[in-house]
Amino acid sequence: MNTPLLPTFEFVEAPAPPFAPLAAFEMCDESVRLGIFGSGSIEVSREGISVLAPDALGYQRTIDRLGQWAQAQWLATHGLRVMRGAVVARQGKAVALIGGARCGASVLALVLSRRGWGLVSDGLVVIDEHGMLRALEPVVTLDTEATIGLPEDVPITRLTTGRDRVKVSTTSHGDAELGAYVVIRVLQSLNQLAFERVPFTTDTRSALEGYQIAPLLGSEHRSPPIVEAPTWRIARPVVSADPHSHTPPVLAALLTSALDSEVG
Image (cartoon, rainbow, N blue to C red; front, side, top):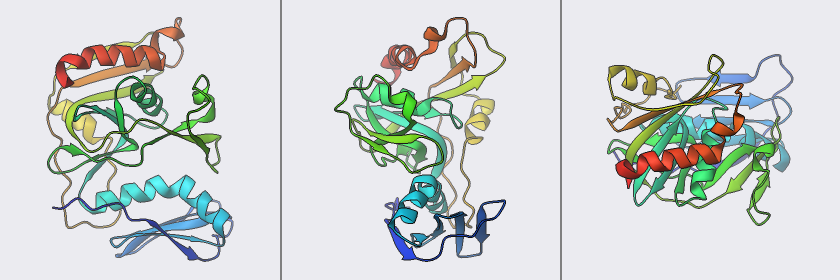
């Protein structure tokens, strides 16, 4: 299977979805469409991605809020394994930072990308049948408050989303061979950071599969299997007596030290 390139977002002038208590959603055999009241809709088919909006502002708002969802659906439909998280790499070896929404993978990826690693992707972890991690746009999407302390010359683009969000450009890395997984969780039950190497077992594989984004459109391809690789687990507390013990720079230092012998 040849890995498809991400299509460009095709602008189609059309009315924005009317107000409704739930997001506008339509699906048929050929496409799936998701819309935002007052902005526009984004439609994914096997051929490409279309943004239906009344004007340029609605087009940009729709991409900012739904563009990553559309990319995930396109890639998954074409047989790639798409998971939630971020990817950094060094010397051709990638580390997949796997986790759910607001787990901190994006901030950690940004810190690592400024400490000798390169960003492969953020928001989506895309793995092909050869165990290669697909490189996407070299930007990290963060809440604006997470950018405090960054140098003033770092390129930042404000997004037109419901939350105060920005895209931060950073050091990039091309496609890279899978070297390790890091599963990141935030747990209410913890009161201190937990960081450990875990054996790659059937349970580990199942846990990783739980972060997969499945295609809503039928696909003629099967997603690649989870490739066995060294795996670490990070569990951060919601509230900690020592919040400085698990800041992104601290986690980046811990990970870099742990991965040096595995990833190079």
